[in-house]
Length: 189
Image (tube, rainbow, N blue to C red; front, top):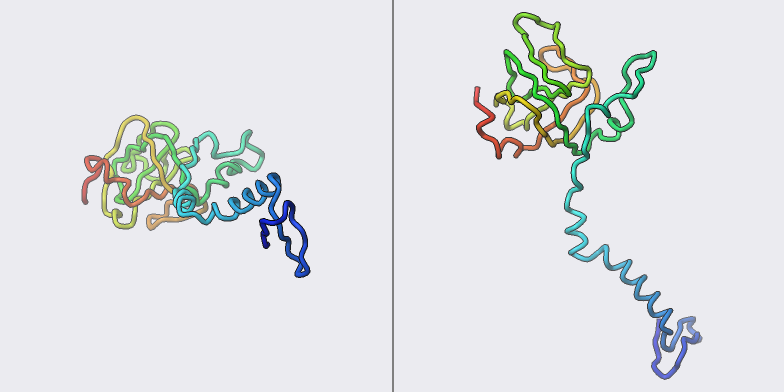
């Protein structure tokens, strides 16, 4: 577009371009359109886009469809939508006789496991979440904590069988720095 200060209004030239000054309304519209195009490209906006969204607050009560249907438990749309996303869960760490390195379970209510006495007959609720430490921490044991714990990590859904044959349907992968602020909670094997 060509602007010619000698004219009060835009006018078409033989090349099809306009010459002249913009009226206040047209000038404001042009400025708004230009800003809309350029702002997403600015470094400040790019830095804001790089900031991850806060984790989704997920509750155990949102895991399954309610009421339970004739086919049994079904994963809820809310839980399915959280698959692969960062989530924050608040629950109880399962007390185990034989803790396994690199993982533990989180449940909506306090549970104490007696693996030696009960074997496979455990009382874990259907909504039990298998919490996995980062691969670099797979040899670490997590000391049991009484009361509610709040965890943030990436949720994953689907049937996964571990090396012992136990199947998990809901997992929370903790980030690599998850234990850095609480070293007293862990011990090496």
